Image (tube, rainbow, N blue to C red; front, side):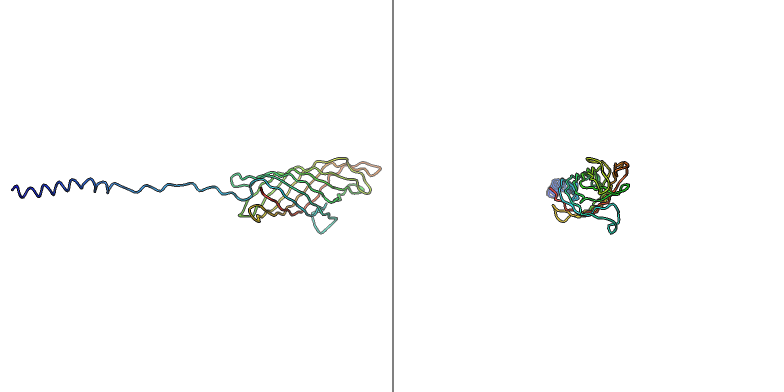
Length: 210
């Protein structure tokens, strides 16, 4: 009886000794993989920039009608991204090439313009579509038959454009601006008049992003 029980006891002791190991194997699980938030990506249109522009300025929106003058200038600004929308501000100087604008009994000449513009748009890959609006100060000169106001006259600017990234630093754009200047005084030698004048500008430009 003793010889029979001794192997049985040894078998039971071995079974109890290995039981915790098997239990531990059953309860162990691999740790869950950690989740990392994807890094935010920039649209490529944010930050400071400066550039040049050139185009045509005319009193008429049709670029093939009326007097047209070559214009050009410089610009600089800053863009940021807010909830997927590109917003920014820009300062711009343009020489308008002596664009003529009609007033009673003659025409005045627009020569210089300084504009402060806000803009907002949507980036689609490497292309930005945007609208712009702001304030413009225009210097006017006397025409052939009429005299104009001295100094600079304030007005407002509306526009739209498209900008394309060429590489990490350079981009090219095409932009249209409508500028209206109200209550411009003119004198034809006999009578004094006040007129609302406007012009249309189509220009292309290049920006360098810092």
